[in-house]
Length: 115
Image (cartoon, rainbow, N blue to C red; front, side, top):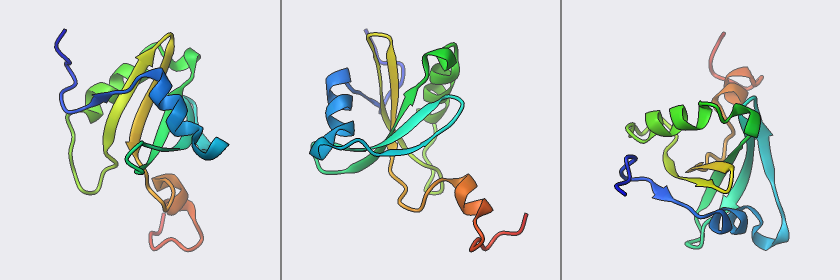
């Protein structure tokens, strides 16, 4: 079967679980309507953000996100490295952004932006 999302790595559920549970700790970075985001570490030592899609949001959120982000590469947008669709669980593996997400930065008191 040809991967229709070229350039993306297909992670196994075991790889995802190992990345999220590195050093025997699980760090939740946040949550939203589509799922929870955890900090993870790949075997290379690279820090990543891993979104676990809620089963209730699986109707199309996962497919839309992978479909859209697999085609986009821009220095000002977070990079999608890969995905996992295994045993009814769906995950998206993103580049880790140490300074939080866009909403947090736009709404912070120290923000350079005016809303």
